[in-house]
Amino acid sequence: MTKNLALVSVIVPCFLSTKTIRRAVKSIWNQTLRPSEVILVDDCSPDSGQTLKTLYDIQKEYPNDWIKVVPLFVNKGPGNARNIGWEKATQPYIAFLDSDDSWHPRKVEIQYGFMSKNENIALSGHDFLYLDEKEQSYSSLKENYSISQVASRQLLLSNKFPTPSVMLKSSIPHRFDSGKRYSEDYLIWLQIALNNNEVWKIDLPLTFLYKAPFGEGGLSGNLWRMEKGELNTYLQLRKQKLIGRLSLYCLIVYSLAKYTYRCILKNKFKFKKLMTSK
Image (cartoon, rainbow, N blue to C red):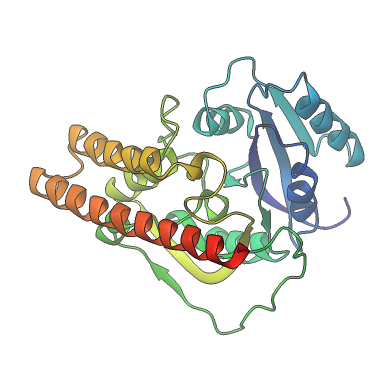
């Protein structure tokens, strides 16, 4: 490890991840500014130890102490796995990556560079691209990109940040709700923002997702459970007195409207796919 290191711990929750985790780790290693450590948390994958074995094999493929492997013996979901990884992290900044996604090689250079020069910022995120599994090429990044602050009211209307786009200060007191399996990321972003912390967005696609943002695969595959998770997020914010009663009612109506629209899109896609296959 000859290049300078960013003071960043990368946390990757892993669940049945044997087919994709190498791509994720490789994208971390290939950063132009490499993070100081990677923490792979096996969330008790029910595959007779195959995921855990793969993680230990990957650990041996990289320099000593760069990768930590943390096995969990009870499956509690990605939020809990990220919290456990957070406890093991040694760096002042935390970045998250899902085991089936990857990063642009300049992600850490750009995002950490921005945050380390602006220590008042608690959390930042950025745009993403949806790629086909076979796509490996990276798009060139525009030189004149914008970085803007995200107001809490903007974040309340929609989750601006997929988890693999987020970098935050490890010292913040908030953590993922370990008992929450849907919208657990959205809840913590909002808790951070609504507690008067600065949240910013970089207008560059620095994360690559290999499944659609909703309605396809993984925990995001069940639209209604996702919707219930979002509604629960708003209810928790109200219980914590971070939003008012009127705001809660308006957000619930708006969220249900978005859910209806997503269902229409999903059914339209299914119909189109069915007609194409005939």
